[in-house]
Image 1 (cartoon, helix red, strand yellow):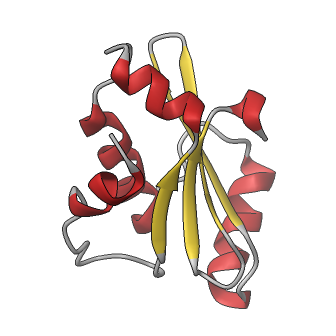
Image 2 (cartoon, rainbow, N blue to C red):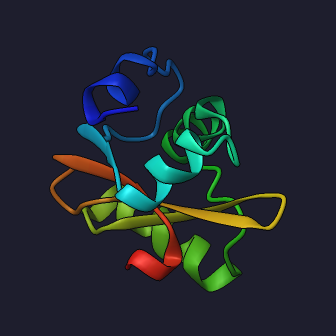
Image 3 (spheres, one colour):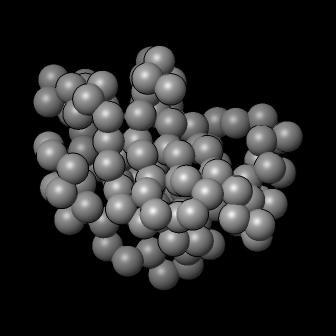
Length: 106
């Protein structure tokens, strides 16, 4: 799945807390999808949760940082798990791009 294909999967999220800009994924995430270790729909679900303010599997301190970031324009990081795989979703401070990546790729 290429970068433009993941963008096509994203319907408008009505109760979103912030814009996520252009959506891209790293080679690691793309490889896991190609190997069918995670379905493309999982990334879609993660992006929807992220945009709604469901930060996934992060500590309370990071949740509070994300809640503030929605208001002050800082970077936002969410973390989601599928079986033994963790995927991070990061929206940049200027809301121009959101990246789905593996923690090892950070």
